[in-house]
Length: 242
Image 1 (cartoon, rainbow, N blue to C red):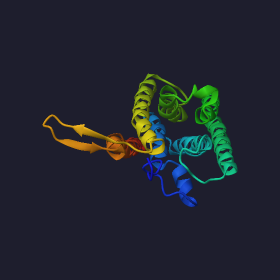
Image 2 (cartoon, rainbow, N blue to C red):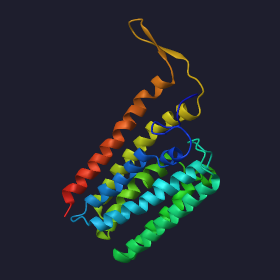
Image 3 (tube, one colour):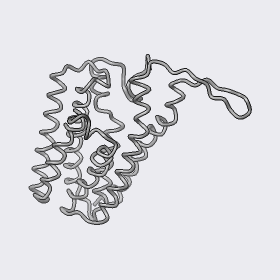
Image 4 (cartoon, rainbow, N blue to C red):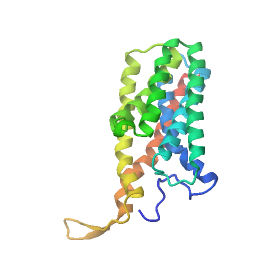
């Protein structure tokens, strides 16, 4: 809506503040928590391997995916030059792949399919290739929720088993819930100019309805859910720490 920032964590546009907004800090940490949760399900947690997995996903999602998303329509309304967004997306994705190759050399070359899938879906989702076929709730849930958990576990164990498959389903469902909450909030903040209405209660009283009231519940949930997911991931990693 007019005067609203494009997200609850966005800073006023300009300079370094645009780069903070571009990183989507709460959501980036939220998705990195899936990597940590997956890694923490291994019988032993290797801090070095976890660090590599987190670095790869930070580069791919925190930087590359978000730069591509901003390149595609400027939803965050930043003033970051186009060439900088292209450089960030290319550097982030190539950096993630480089970390992945190094990780495969340590763990297992069966990790290459993870790199291929991730290297394709990041631009396919962000740039909405093929008419947005990959820019859906199902793809978001799988690739931004289940996939990080799977990769985190594989980086520790070099295998896939039943426990991580079940955990991936849980992470995917949480990511789907995140998208369902954030979709109407994004619409209100970025596409709606005004909301006018009234809520009439059974006792005859009424209350004005505006955009802030409509987004209060879903956005309030998002504000606390990312903190809860990060806290859960930290606790799980601490329980496994050598």
